[in-house]
Image 1 (tube, rainbow, N blue to C red):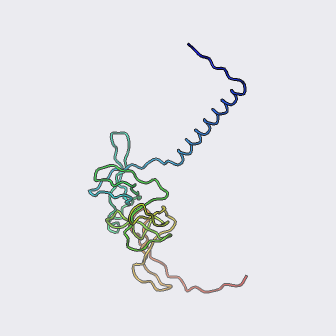
Image 2 (cartoon, rainbow, N blue to C red):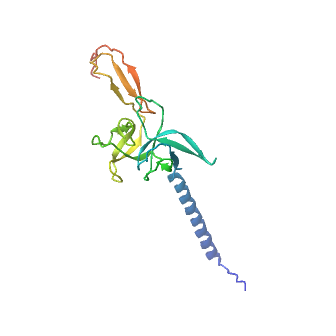
Image 3 (cartoon, rainbow, N blue to C red):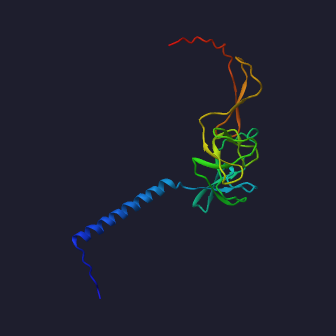
Length: 208
């Protein structure tokens, strides 16, 4: 038997108001999820090494899996002083990835990454590539925010290209020229800059 329910005008207004509230909240939650959940960066381990959790990776190309999705191919960073190949860094997520297996990199802009424990890293330090290692050390392209206890020797870092790292080939006297190696922003390699000799600085400041 068919039953037909009837609403009073007040009940109908309340049902309609509740429906509108539910739809508005659902739309807001969906929009919030869209902005909070970045698309994962999927990769294939193209090396012979198992990638640890929170490891720094070198992107070396893409891999088309079944003509449906281009995975980024990654390897363990190597000696960029000898092989200055341009590459953007990726950082592995919380799961180890075996050779020829697939994983997911962190989307950023804040990353968890394991370090070499060479020094006591502090907020503001710059860290980056280490030769033949999945760990970061003093260098670039990241700025340290602080330690993260999610894993042993883990830092919370943010991607930072605001300043270049450089070191002199040998001691340079004040007001003298010399070679300075500038670490490239997109690799661990260096480019050499020869500085100019400037005249001595004269203090000509006046009180204003």
